[in-house]
Length: 255
Image 1 (cartoon, rainbow, N blue to C red):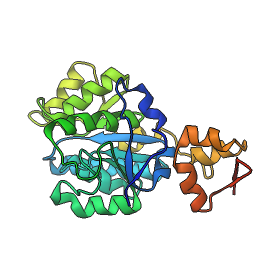
Image 2 (tube, helix red, strand yellow):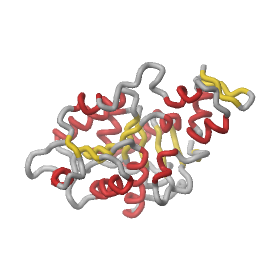
Image 3 (tube, one colour):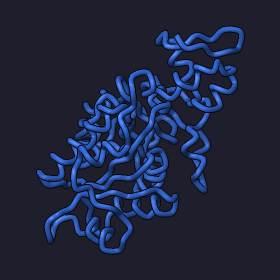
């Protein structure tokens, strides 16, 4: 079922032109958790696939959600590595599973993860909508991780967006002649390399049991329903349905 978020995620407030609305399929509660964005080429090397999977999996293990664009290549690898702790931002209406090669993965994300789009049902992807989609992918994550990219690619446009938004960019080290886009970012001092996956992900901290969920932590102070919805949107109602919180007398109580 396609629904509309009652409020935009707070992370999108930094965008000069945030979307007017966001449609979703899946679990909006994922928006209440910390997120990182992972993007890259549609034709990753075996090394890139292995490293991207490792990074996405490690972030999911410490309570983070991986955000990407559901495209072929690095995007799909990142989603699968973190599944079901992943958010796919689509460049088309959510009734269309595109690209076709990723349709089964996208369908699974719609059921067990979260798919987002600013486009109404029936809207097909265009070259322009992919570029526009990228700003949401970048804005949602605390940082942007680019695991492989060519110099003249959409991924490098995501890097430009990250710089404009003040987001840190991290990249994998590559051999000469591979991933010239990320090598360019390193040479220009616009990105930092990831030398060790465990050390890198460990720098974000392991979220302790009971602390891994910011919405539940927020509810410990018994906020009003209006305060909770303003901060976390529809995730509040999803948590109520899952029995994680109780809404009583316009107050929100953790269970």
